[in-house]
Amino acid sequence: MEEVAGAVTAPVARDPGGRQQRSRHPGLEFRRADACDLPFGGGELTGYRADKVYHALADPARAAAEAWRVLAPGGRIVLVGQDWDTFVIDSDDPALTRVMVHVRAKAVPSPHAARRHRNLLLDAGFADVTAEVRTGVFTDESFLPMATGLAEGAYAAGAVTRRQADDWIAEQTGRARRGRLFLAVPMFLAAARRP
Image 1 (cartoon, rainbow, N blue to C red):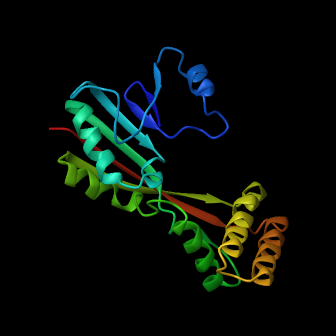
Image 2: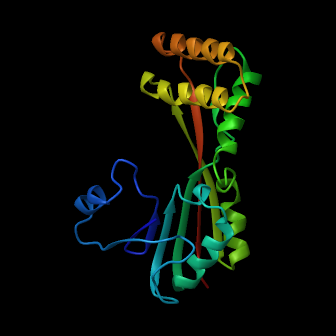
């Protein structure tokens, strides 16, 4: 994980060294660290942000407890992430689509961490916890590789046949070409304060 002036963010695959982040925020200090073992003293930070991180952790509750440790009283925490099992994709075969989404979710260490953000913060002792959901709707052909990846992953996991995957990909490709692709991804945001 990378630390950005008290904010924890997942490293960007295309930018594992953080060069892009440094160029966007030249006055900030960046450190790579484990979200469950941050290199800060107790109460050293006033802000903490984990953006699409907790789903990648085996123990999100441990990371929330670590956030509590490093935040000073009055410090703010923000958690943002998607729930990997709630992707919504329009398809002629909704049952097959659910299988594909579910298989993808099972490949993530904590696929339901985002729906648990509020309770994770409450359990860790945070106060003034708020939670909201914003849904991104994608209809652009550029999101076709994401849909294709779901089908290929389900096939590789043995959850669907090659023909099922190919037929589903062909349907989604046709939808994309006709401007009928529809993918919705709920993004969960929770915020709180350390008392």
